[in-house]
Image 1 (cartoon, helix red, strand yellow):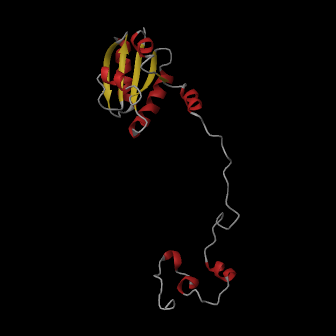
Image 2: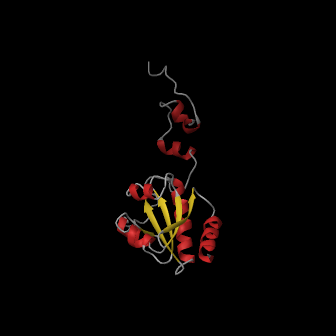
Length: 172
């Protein structure tokens, strides 16, 4: 009964051993028929050096070169009582486009360092702040001056859109 079953041939098992397990070839001769690729032989797998796992605190410290995190408890001090222009990005961890906007906001924070303050608020952790500011979609970037909302940009936009909004707010 076992000899009546012939497995289908495909690219992965087109060798003589796959067609007939009773073929008289040794495993060594059989391996010679397969293409050789570096790093695929047993015991020769290239290993990447292990890097330590980064904690959330380490990631936050690394991101401090760009926008800082703001929460509901620090919102009043950081945004509403600030005397300078403030840019706030409303984001969520599950939002893919938020990652693209985060990189742009980090670049803007470095370029306009000293002229504006940039913050990032997680809309999932502090939904009440997002609702109070009229944020119903993310990513949303809002500009504030002395606690007053000047502009709201919804969605992923090119960096030039954010820079133009900042420059017009700084000029006025």
